[in-house]
Image (cartoon, helix red, strand yellow):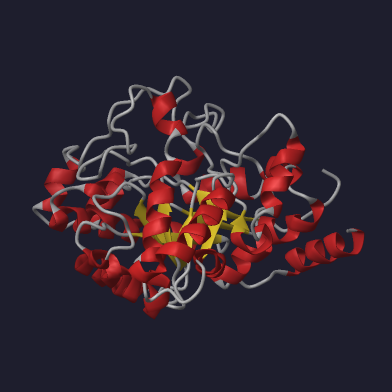
Length: 368
């Protein structure tokens, strides 16, 4: 594309070396983890394309996302990405029924990212992963590393044993709010460990069915967060829905506000329509943004909610269905591109603006 934007990528998936994770684990967890027992297994759905892009491999056979050095050189540099947010894939461990083991492993993974990945390149930032199985241990982990300047977000699996608005989880949000860290959820662990089935109808038969229906988790969590009063109790908390698409949001908000008019007595702590709480507290990421046959239909959807302040670019690199920055930008109306591609994320994560990013934003503004 002829126009240059600053780019902040809010969803990159590193894969820390398990041997390095083991270095940060005490016994008896270390032996167990290094033996290959790393928490609950996934459901075994087969993706014929594979989880990772087949072209994200270097000549020596190593994967680009397996080290901070190669990720910086072969992805951030290639697409001139100003900042990249690392969201570790290993979220299923957070759904282990053994809360102590889960908490130990996610802490070790966080240590690898903080001590071995972030120092490699100043463009890297990290989501701190926590296990929601034991919210008190999760809050302790946030308070252990939430002060680190490279940590900009808390990340949990979207699979869960109950909706995330319920008070059981509030210690996590209290700790996140203390450090002004958004809380994000990422899909793929539905039905794993102690999580509920992947869909309200039960267990799908294929990966195709599983993957297509993942948005149901997001809808359930979002309704719960608003109706349970999470954003009233924690008025500064931001919530990020990673990798969930966008087309489902406007009709959900219409239904939400309509029901509020008749049923608001059940949630007396809500003093405004639900859509207003969502607008102020919830953000989404672009990948996998819907791709209708008529591109104008997507633009209409984007006009139905405040995409300029609620949507952030994500590549999902190196996953099979990821999007490059230029591909994502082409799907957006020109007026939205500066905010979606970088500026909304810059504000949310308090990322300093570089001179290059300033020039790009000035160029976009002057050229419409």
